Image 1 (spheres, rainbow, N blue to C red):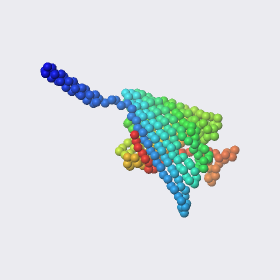
Image 2: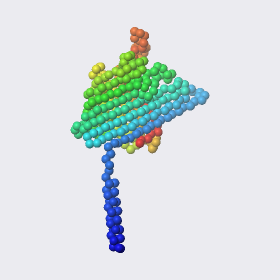
Image 3: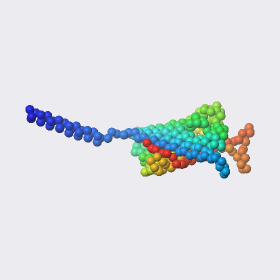
Image 4: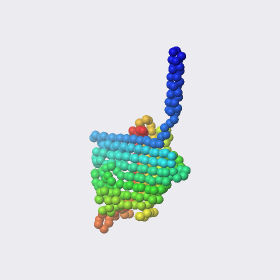
Amino acid sequence: MKKFLVTIMVMLCATAMYAQEQAADSAAVEVPKYWNTSLLTQLGFSQVSLMDWAAGGFGSVSLNSYLDFNANYEKNKTIWKNRAQFGYGFIQNMGEGFKKSDDRIILDSNFGYKAADKWYFSVIYNFRTQFTTGYKNMKGSPIVSNFFAPAYTSLGFGVTYTPKPNLTVNFSPLTSNLVIVKDPDLRSIYGNAADQYVRYELGAQLKVDASVKLEGFQANTSLTLFSDYLNKPLNIKVNWDVNITAQLTKFLAVTLRTYLIYDDTIHHIDKTDAAGKPVLDEDGNVIKIPGVQFKEISGLSFSYTF
């Protein structure tokens, strides 16, 4: 009987040791990770209050918020990169009223299938608009933008080159672009006819995305060049974004974001003569012309990356 019990105990110990070894081997095998996601959040705030200030001035409140979400997939010969950016900021000037300082919704997606080393056949998608009504001056008039006025959506077919993990170059010789302006009063600003809810463009697009990540510092930039085959193909449309974050502490960072746009179909600048006086058309309205648009937002923000 004792020999039988000893035999049973030895078998149980051996079984337990074998199970532990199998568990250790299973733990050592890493499950493949195909998705890589991140979320950057930033919030900046400032406030000025004056009471009987002899030198004059106005109190103000300002806020800037920004979200940058990335979800990238890679498995075998397939890549799929997705990015969503949401930004909104405003200035509340006690003397002149409310005006937004930043307003953007940007969605990007790039799906590719490997054709050769670092080269992919790809389909690229982009969507851009804003959340709320935009005004030309602090007093609330005139309106110059609104939700889906304008909105831009594009779909391109081409190739993507990834020489480095932090650098992507996409060339889409066949890119379809829609310019949507739901507000009839704003269509002339963005190149649409008065009765044209959607304007169609067909052209070639070059898009370059690059990023740098170091300890406590990260920067990324996106440059898009578009040539419309159907309307003045030599007039290249430019969209260039730069985002820089220098982390000071776990939750405090210095941030810089710049946006540059050039689109010859957007007529938003008053044409003036040599004396600086507005030039009028036959109906007595000020003639509008295109020009370079530039925005810079910098400051100290609460910032955290998930």
